Image 1 (cartoon, rainbow, N blue to C red):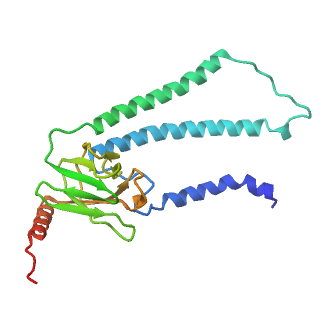
Image 2: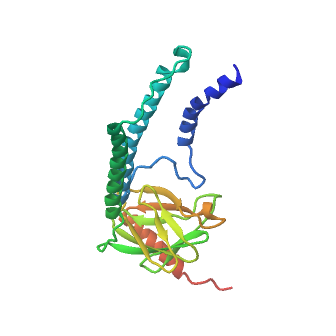
Image 3: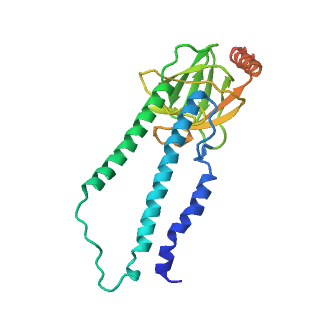
Length: 258
């Protein structure tokens, strides 16, 4: 097989590569494939992702099939010697059509996305309780209304300490940055929300099932950015209350005499 033949086959290598990448996870454990949502705002973003991706894939496949048909149907080897294709100089209706169609598609995507994101990122005023989330180089801190704080220091050596919440509770997250801008992102739960120094930003979650979900900082924030894992663990109300009591007992434990 000649080098030219090998070069022609390189697109075929993209298919197994795509499958291989789809089965991998990033160092922090986040899958490149959109995970199943477990919070209403995560569900809304997932629906938007699907609603945009499916038409985009259909349009892409249609364009590529049309291009492939033209390449095969009118390839030079099938034309007589000295063949010159018909020279068409302008078609007003066609030019209007291929200008208007992409414009309509782009405006539809923009309107759909804007409406959904407005709904998913509206500050909630009625919630069960609030947790303050502070981003720093390189980790997260979660301060609970009971007065204790869980520290989630960044690492790639293993899993970080989980951020624990109860199921079926609407929890408002108040995000803050202490040094540079960070971005709190757990794909199955909510969209990316920036933690900005000197400014309070808000998001929320209401997880409907017990489990563990992964995320990461989505804003390049320094040399240790890749270590800023996020692990969210949801528990039943009973288990959550027991966990809270354990955290309070640890915080209030008296130091042992030396």
